[in-house]
Length: 109
Image 1 (cartoon, rainbow, N blue to C red):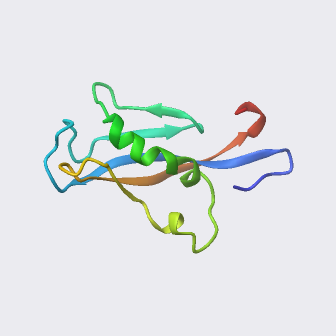
Image 2 (image 1 turned 135 degrees about the vertical axis):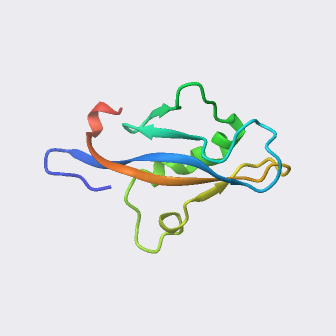
């Protein structure tokens, strides 16, 4: 994350998409299902869609880091796939940065 002279910071919006399901879909999700994380903390689902809370819980701890610039060579900067913990499903999600925005950190706390 880089700070500008006026105290603003730059942060990425993210899109998390079901990349593949290597087992059986027990939560009703399909390849291509997704959600977006925008404006630092706004979680958006496409109308009429859902996202499994267990899959969300497995990727959630990494999203704050993926929103920020990371050091070169940091494993999280290179890896973008995360797996749901359900061993029957083996749902694989891909996290992508969709845009970079400037935000005022005072507005976020």
